Length: 478
Image 1 (cartoon, rainbow, N blue to C red):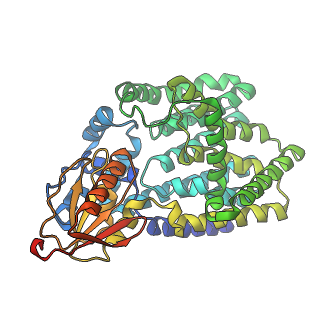
Image 2 (cartoon, rainbow, N blue to C red):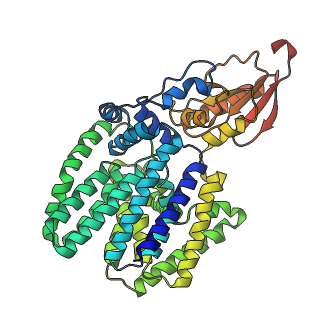
Image 3 (spheres, rainbow, N blue to C red):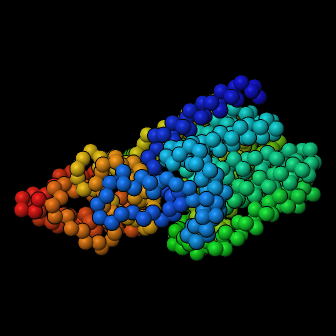
């Protein structure tokens, strides 16, 4: 692989990922990352009307490793390694949302560089493999958000690279290092362990004596994972719908396709079905070429690509829920790319990359791919001086956090709860941010909308999918 061409690809990937990180509005789960690292796992928002300028300090600060570990054990479902890294990063580069995303971009670029070395070692065309990975919607999306996916992906790819080289050279040191890197992946995101499991199965079939060595490298991290998970296992009861195999397989097929091709059927509108069938045909054609042009390492990459979907189904069976999402299935995308890259003819490769590029454009610009909090804040900012009602959400993190981060400093905001009575007398203009990001925000938005519509002194003057604007018409209540 020409090092200059690889450097140019990594540079282009950096430009793309940084652009996506800048363009995407802030998201629900990212707020957890930022507030956790700031030492405010559950922010203490003011009561009544306040401005974003008055609460910017809640986004700053540093929690320290011990506080982060404690907060995760008592109120979340994630291991701490990524959040520790984010806390250190924020101390250096500041508390901005974009700065937090840049850390994920750097992890993603590191993952692509490691993937290039793995592709070269496995005699897979490097640039096609990297392009298929980078343009996979799930990989690009998880590669820019302020969550632990990018770090876990980097460690997973590094673990596979080290174990692959260990098998080639029969070196125990590489196997031990590979296991340790896999352990770090699981200590960044528990779901990364599925890729490690697939790699260990392959290692057992090729150099089985190296498996105990790799497990020894993973063991300290797995012990810590278990210590955290035991405390967290009841934290998010009800997060996923109950498990049903037929439903789970349907969701798995849908989200696996979206992890590769994004939401193209959603953008297609009335042509959604033919677009979906066309994407399915494109993917099946690619897998057909894989079957006919079998690569020496096709078994390894197929095993790794299937490890995460199979692991998610197993998790669903064990815990009786359906933990299947695009961002989880992103762990499979590098391995699918390595499986396809040596098999696809140039025309089919170009077609697949063109379709993926269209999906990445949607990730950057299509409102349908974005969460509503930041978009609603931008829409509400068009009404300066109005009182903006924002749902508190399930716990005051994922809904108000991104909204306030995207709002101008002087916006007048009040957080609302389901069933809350709000005295709006004296407010000439009211903007309801009709956000439905979780159960509580959906309920609060619907109830407040009904209350505003029932007020004879309020007249609805504008409505979009994000906001509803009401002006007061009774002069004696102004």
